[in-house]
Image (cartoon, rainbow, N blue to C red; front, top):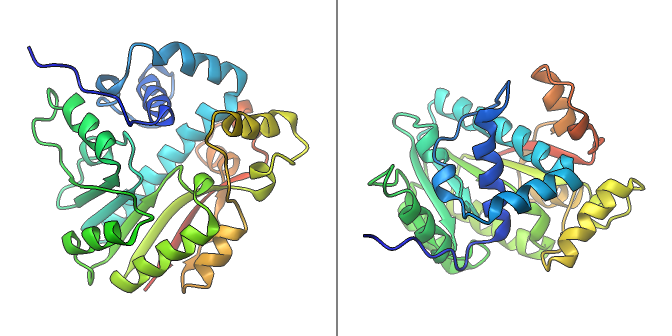
Length: 275
């Protein structure tokens, strides 16, 4: 009997997000389907995820709508002829398997423990995980060099940067995008971003401010937000779309969701392009 995969080194946030993706199938109007999320879950995660959702309903709601936004974005890139996609800080993302976009080569970058856990946990459903896994910290130059050796630097590249901006200091972002711009052309970057007011817990909405403080108390403080992220990308030749708040995106899908309205313009979804 094969030993269960070791979750050591996998962030608790990655498990929470996977739990909420697995829950989506039970909803009356699911925004996406992820049949690969359930095998990734630890027995203990359900109670914690449900408690967090009850205390901060905008957490799971934000994840739901951003997931659909990014699914739509990578599918549009693929329809336009794009053939390679990179997920930075991929965590327990399963898009390479669940979207199954023909002809699209996927690359994932995260810590070795996280990638190995995911590959092992999904081995029953996916004997061969459909992405090239590059272990390392994407904030480090040696990791970007490893990605550059695997990815065609002259072909259009979709980069998904989901749930990461919160945790990366502006200085490290500047270094990251200088390195990416030097190695890849035709970048299409999809990312989500909180406002700086959320990061600093000064929105005036106690629900949002308490949510930000919660992560700080958990040892994972939020450090970067809008407009700092916008400014550093523009300075590096990226052209940004107008962006959409998660509430506006939910409304565009026909959902009047009280949980997502809690964000009240303080959390947005973006596409940035650099030729």
